[in-house]
Length: 113
Image 1 (cartoon, rainbow, N blue to C red):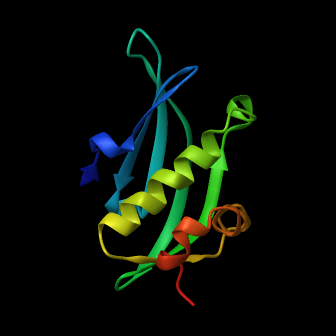
Image 2 (tube, one colour; image 1 turned 30 degrees about the vertical axis):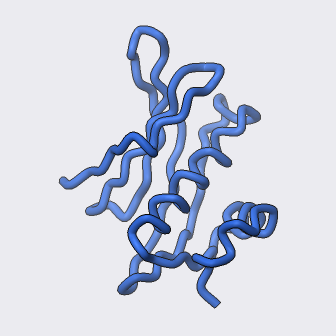
């Protein structure tokens, strides 16, 4: 299984460090939260399907016990930044991603029409 973790995918959060891993073979971005002891727990994921340079972001999940902390927004931000850095575009199928890109016009250049 190929995975990608880069410095751009790490985000300091109040609860620890959010690490986003791209699981290519599963067409998924997985988010884990690492605490001060470097213990990691999965907090959610974004699923997608790929057609050439287009990624249809189909599903965003943050597990209920981690809700209300802004983790979904950070996860989607990391996915969009990764897509941009790879010269790809997104098709926001997931309603959360649709709302996120509406609120963040800085990503309009990578939203497929």
